[in-house]
Each structure stands twice: as structure tokens, then as C-alpha cells.
Amino acid sequence: MPQHRRMETPSQNEQTRGVYPELVTDATVVNAIYYATKGVADKGVRDALQSGIHSAIQALQKRVGDVASITLEEEAIDKAA
Image 1 (tube, rainbow, N blue to C red):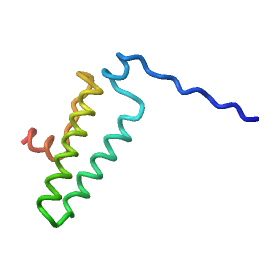
Image 2 (cartoon, helix red, strand yellow):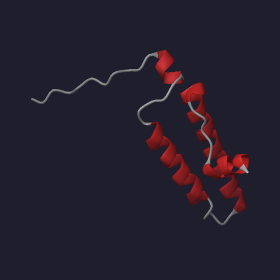
Image 3 (cartoon, rainbow, N blue to C red):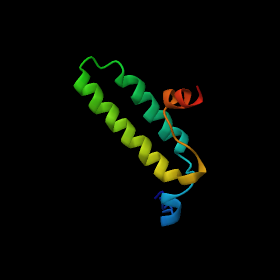
């Protein structure tokens, strides 16, 4: 019978602060969804989707704390200009 590995549960501090292994994957998915929302024709639906994306960005930022700055690519470009 195969043995199942128990997943380690990060400590509360690790859950809320610092870079986590899946950060790049999560950020890439959020970014891809953001760009996909630009193809939504109805403005109300598009705005609702993009609002959810901004909530996801805030959640990513909360998760990494001061270790990194999480922004959408367009926001980073706007800030640099």
C-alpha cells in the first residue's frame, strides 16, 4: 500500500509573511487572468473581474509582506514613467 506524505502546514508567521514557493505560479496565474479580462466586451463584467484581480493582488502582497512588491505589470510601468 503506498504511503501518503503528510503536507507540512506552514506556521502562522510563514502563512502571512515572506515569499512562499508558489508565489511565481500564483502571480503568473493572476496576471494571465487580468489580461484575459481585457477581452470581456461588457464593461460591467470586465470591471467586476478586474476588481477581483485587484483583490488577488492585495492578497498576494499581504502574503509576501515587505519582502517583495506585488503589482500588475501595467501599474509597475506607470510608476516607473
